[in-house]
Length: 374
Image (cartoon, rainbow, N blue to C red; front, side, top):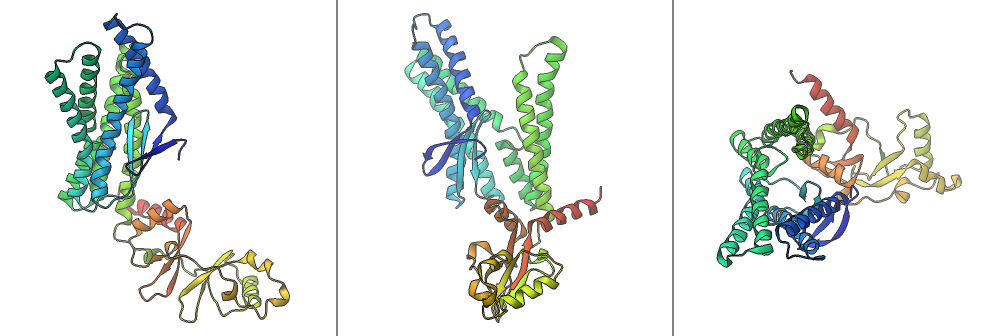
């Protein structure tokens, strides 16, 4: 999974850590342990390092709690959470699909910042209630301030941040079109990305200062992710309203199961379509399986005349087919998830219509992009 390491499950959700996380863990541990040692000289030996490590874990636990906030709300909406991943910029909860309504999308988006604000309030309340001081008070203060910063930073109204998802939900509510919200919030995210980059570059150029160099990384992160999200929004716009039946390949590779292998082979010789895999149908045109041309090699040629295609066709599971009225956006997601290049398309009457090719969808998007007014 993109070089990540699975470390277990959180409430049934697969939990991954990106190798970059260990770098940040080490830097936070080292820097904060040094700060504790300087602020509290009574801390000797390995105690500052141990407290720095504990603080780093608490900070990352806050990030995990933030992502669990998103995840629990999504689960209540019937959306599967595929994973939670910690990486250099924080955390990411990967959801199976989008929320079905703008209101649902809003609550999934805002849940994370609300959890961070709750942790900020809890840490602040403990500080005042116990009059915590010394190293414990310093750790609690840091925990409170980091959670407040985590909430406020994520509320910036630009994708891929939570504030961008909130903005997307609002635009979706106003326009009635989810892709409009995606594109608009992505553009705002790109603006904030450029602002972050400039805030890191200007001190470096004008004063030779690296004080805001972290802003450069954040800016590039926002630009990259906002750009890809905007591209996805444009794809959504182009495919909205289309179904699987709209992109069925003409002259799809379909053969009758009643053909003998000899008849099938002879047709292949005179055919110039060069298909290497065919869908097999029964007398009613319903799908019963598939056959690859190279599978004929396993059957002696002396048996080709009396052997029918349906006798050696491999059955297909229902999960590897789509209905003709299924939204094309769902089909694209299915192709990506199962890493498929083609899918059989079944009509309303159960009859096989043909195949849907991933390359044809890509060509459709390209054609629509060229036809779209500048």
